[in-house]
Image (cartoon, rainbow, N blue to C red; front, top):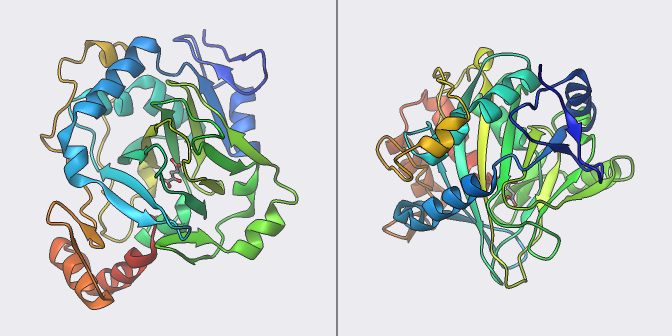
Length: 324
Ligand SMILES: O=C(O)CCC(=O)C(=O)O
């Protein structure tokens, strides 16, 4: 029988293979909008993941950036379905997908995976936002979505760890406005929310994970330190919440879960086969051509996507201000 054991400092749960989403864990997720699982990946697993990401040349070819409005660029690479490498095994693992199913209350699929690369000295900030700020526009009718944010490097206040407003997901979806090249939650509302939802810095050691609800308001600072802060994120959607618009993230696609042991057993540490990276119309790579106006942006977007024309146009515009 599974259990949930709180860490002695009270900041989360100790992950072991015996971990289960008990009533207490579910209540905390519903109340606070997140849970922290310490040692979610053990030392060997996170070391293998880190090496795989460092050696993965496709990240260098496919990353894109978003101006943070403070002079730096947030840097990330996104792809859709889990493939047969360690990133895919983590996304399909019982500890990630199975835990998510219990927290979201039903079958889930991978909406996309992402590596956020916050480099030493230059790493950009993410402005206050909710993930559902964008995902709503992509036709996800319900906020039955959440993310597993896994620390590849230590993340703390010096290198731009995640900051959250505790319980802010209960406010529902906020309006978002353009901040730099990112979609930021209405700053006035965030300021008001911060009076009742305590600002919390999520400091994680490598392998620790934060699982958070798509309406939880979060941000992260620039990295002015010498320490890199990379993170691997897997975003999930409830199977029953199949997006009603076609867009760059996938519709419901059954996720074949695997036992946690497959993370260590996985022979292919890095694979590009079947990895469909998000090609950013703003900072299209590897050609590195930057769109100057919104019109080419729309054209670029439409040529890649096969969505309904109204949806295409709407999303092309949203795209230019979205964080992803
Ligand atoms: O990793 C971070 O600093 C923030 C990432 C984030 O908020 C996002 O990808 O939406």
